[in-house]
Image 1 (tube, rainbow, N blue to C red):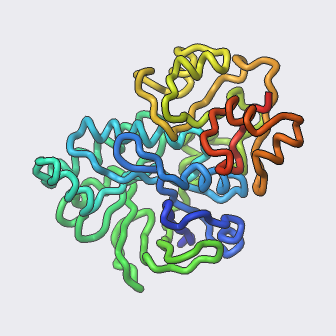
Image 2 (image 1 turned 45 degrees about the vertical axis):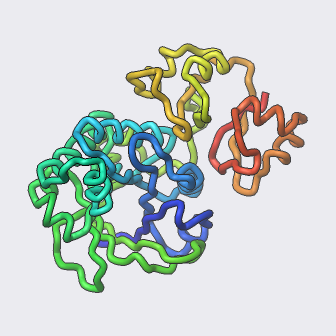
Length: 325
């Protein structure tokens, strides 16, 4: 069994996901970000669009950790970023030579022991939060720093650009970085999946999916008891809580935040609907503009940007739920 997939980041720009899916691609691994809290500029749009059209996704986070503790912080940044979206594929830690080069520049010796330790701490944190953990690397880095024992413990996404698969034990094989995919400008990484991760993850009840669910939901279920809010620069958890009529403790509990003084711009928060009685909401659709939504509901762009802390009214994403009044 092999399942056609791709992996993308902000480098691919604005993707036409409906064309991608229509071309026969069955999953996508989305770059969510890197380091402690830097979110990929296209992740929210990519995740929202894929959820909307029912294309299964996973997420990957690039490693810049130079200690086990920093790897845990990177995992928390990743989990905060992806928490508002449906993931039917694993949450992956991308570790490769650029990771080692960065660590060496910090004055820390990058050793096989450190490499294995940061992968283990990231993946363990992901598992502790109820997600399916994976790590990514290429053949040279894997052989030099990681080794097969790590791949026996966690799912492995293997990169080697060749026409012939070499039989390495892995769940996903990234076989090209120069693919051409309808709906995407420029080169695209191409992948083959060898494990039916949506079935495995769903059956195990991981990624906060129900084991009895029969099919991926294209968008957040209407019955959910929270809305989503993208944290803006300068936001505080107490300020967000006050704006939506809830409490800091309620937001911390719902989002698994251990330190309410540490939230990161670009991450997505779940906000209890019970704290917003009488409010009206709208889920952005493909092709919507903020001015069009404002006209439809008899309000203004300024009112919508203030109510939802939207910094750029020209950048809104399908699948995002905003407050109208």
